[in-house]
Length: 414
Ligand SMILES: *[C@@H]1O[C@H](CO)[C@@H](O)[C@H](O)[C@H]1NC(C)=O
Ligand SMILES: *[C@@H]1O[C@H](CO)[C@@H](O)[C@H](O)[C@H]1NC(C)=O
Ligand SMILES: *[C@@H]1O[C@H](CO)[C@@H](O)[C@H](O)[C@H]1NC(C)=O
Ligand SMILES: *[C@@H]1O[C@H](CO)[C@@H](O)[C@H](O)[C@H]1NC(C)=O
Ligand SMILES: *[C@@H]1O[C@H](CO)[C@@H](O)[C@H](O)[C@H]1NC(C)=O
Ligand SMILES: *[C@@H]1O[C@H](CO)[C@@H](O)[C@H](O)[C@H]1NC(C)=O
Image 1 (cartoon, rainbow, N blue to C red):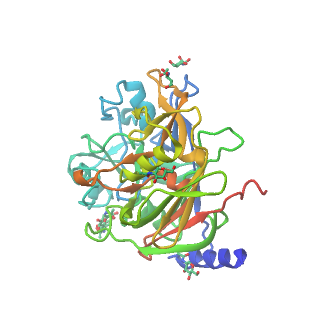
Image 2: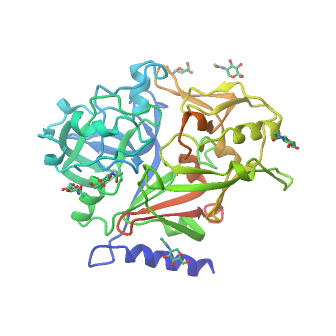
Image 3: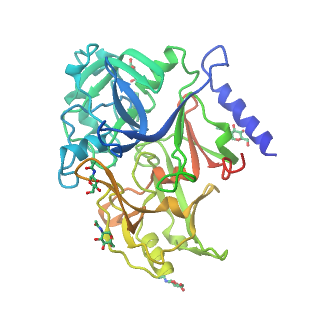
């Protein structure tokens, strides 16, 4: 049964190919820890390692569905000083900083479109507020870009931000994968990928090396070995009224805590069901109505030490003793049920120290859920940790996005 499902998915993946030869393999990039400061071994940032300029400078990307262009920070990185209070922390969390003067292939262009970049970025409600100003305010650049071992272009167009445009806690260099993605278009044009498709699995982290797993970004297809069961496909819809600024709106019908003895506790009453946007780079599992954090505390008999100001900004801190040890299952009204492992939504407190090192406080854990209050008209989101249990594929050629369950135990069964 499973084999048949997977085969039909593979065929769809290949059928999406825009190239005459259906044999072009998708490109696979790890989402992994990258060391940022050569002298500090645990100055780590999680993302996709890439190389910009000549000689290559290491930077770290995160995939952004709501940007068409790719934006790379230089030595004016605009971290929010109220949370990121040193240049070293900012450099690590941004995923290193580009130095144009150190690159012999740096070329400054007239503007982003004449550099070959996309001429339009979203005006969508709830998108980071500065996105609409990025095109006009940024430095338009062309330079050599390699992602992993893949040379994307010797004159890849991107912008260097000259304003503080984002909230500052998602943070690493944004790789634009929107509907007119410069990166996807460049790779298709060069014949490196066959379709404007991208997919993501976030991996498993903050656990022992035995249980940890890198995530992956696939360009030009998806990894059929990472998925299982029925796929749920919807149209990408970027409208403010029926869609989301990322194109991906879903309805969360149920959030259950899975108690170890086998019982489930429902945290949402039927009237609590809520629409959420899928924003795979966001730093948490959920930004959601208060019922989830309240229900978590009630069920597990704990109360919070306060909000987190670390890497998981906006989550809630709890004392690690006697913490709830069950999973969480998020069900969408489409029928998809995604089970998030306990250690992927309740993680040890983690931050970047002043000296650039990643530090933990194992006496505290963070619930990776932020409260989003309707009265402040705050958006609800499913962030990166949703993709510790689910797999996302965005297909710009078909105008659709697909969510499938991540194949649990796949690696354990090898
Ligand atoms: C999902 O699966 C169905 C068959 O169950 C198939 O018709 C559809 O094309 C698949 N969609 C994607 C995006 O893989
Ligand atoms: C990308 O470019 C297209 C075409 O100009 C535009 O319609 C869209 O709003 C832009 N942003 C995203 C996220 O697709
Ligand atoms: C998409 O971007 C390309 C540049 O990469 C540009 O030439 C084209 O006009 C854009 N398409 C739309 C619809 O904005
Ligand atoms: C709190 O949890 C108990 C079970 O532990 C349940 O009976 C009660 O309805 C819950 N209250 C709220 C407000 O969720
Ligand atoms: C950085 O600071 C942390 C915590 O203050 C400390 O444990 C670590 O040894 C320091 N690392 C270096 C390389 O100085
Ligand atoms: C770590 O967490 C414990 C328990 O909340 C707290 O008492 C302690 O001060 C924290 N340590 C640091 C270095 O912040």
